[in-house]
Image (cartoon, rainbow, N blue to C red; front, side, top):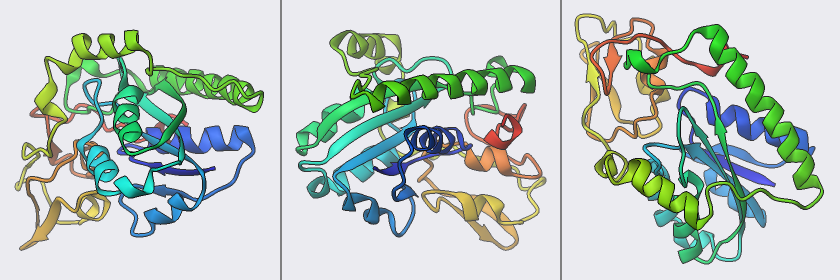
Length: 252
């Protein structure tokens, strides 16, 4: 079983690897931005994993599915989404698009993980609270893997009722948030020291170092990787101040 994933702060990557470990399966596991990502299409069964954004697919993932439409035909796809609060039909959004290209959806799971939106104070939890969330996620993944070994694949987020929940719960209100790349990334030039961590880690190459400072363009996929790993907390997206940097390594 191979896997392709988008992961900003590491949540989704962690869950993908945890599930494969629990299943005892080894395969090609690559981030969506990898130059070698097409190697993951070599197997018949593929995990596609990503964080849910406003009960929708991140645009980078949608773009990837569309650009590789000829690769999906006949492939068995298991979907994983991670969420901070609510997923609705986060898996279902990708499932409907993949079916259009001939993929067979074997199942899906939606796993609660620490929220990565580090510039919104209302969403923040303590490190201890987030450690509890991760521990519960690990337990869920172990239980899911046991069922999958028995041939019982979960279908979270794939039902008609999940579709309605995602549509009316978030997607109608925040539709434009995930239907294109964003130009809202903000970099404080007074704080930025041009270290290049953000540019190196950006999955869309949206950030460049120019004249010793980081400069953002309009290809942000809102993964929050740069916000969480900037050593000077110089980057924000939805808010105006960084309240918490939420890399998965803090909670495992």
